[in-house]
Length: 280
Image (cartoon, rainbow, N blue to C red; front, side):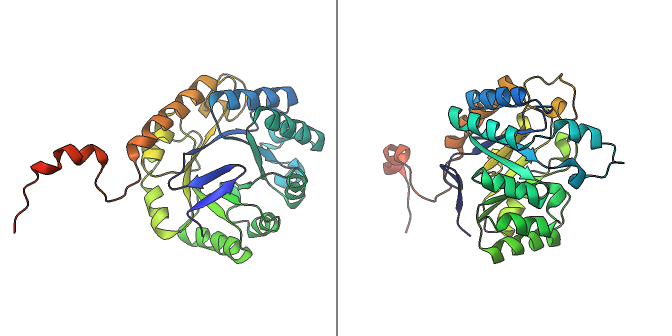
């Protein structure tokens, strides 16, 4: 696999600026107007991409599910998808989404999305991953709840299909306690896999996703809302526009500090070089 993966106009991976994804998810509440405002706010805050969820509720959960009504209220139809994609293109931000069924994969293909996101819940859904790989676009896959064998099996499907992919470290808790973020997992995944490794965040605040970049994440996904006090399951753990802008700014500050990790003499060391004391 390549060191970097192209998502739209961006290269994502080692040596490239962190790919910041504002995860709208279902925080639009089913309102196209709110969705458009979220896209515009994400672009203004400095995010590189917005991520939505694409599904038909009846195919995602049973009618007896306690979240059926919430998901149904937040479901966006095909016309809504065309509208939000248009807005994203107008404001210059990449749009992609998480499909939860093969029909949603097809809808996103018709919209020419630059990538597909596979949710942590579906890293074990190899049929859905195969459906997404058939579209020959990169996949971004969260590993929440998955053990090494489950990740390996998903990776095998993507590699057999010959598609590029990014793995995101993720802990599937809502909200996630910072002490459970386990950011050293980023290095573990980097040693085990040859693809770019990022981080999908569920903590409250922006400290942990910024630290994830310092821990080696090349992409960061953060839930995004217009107002954390809005009703809905994800707003409280989301970043609002002010928080997202602050997160992006902090990430851009630490990127040059992290450097490239090359063993070489820096230009700033040249003046001190004559004072070295080599011995025979």
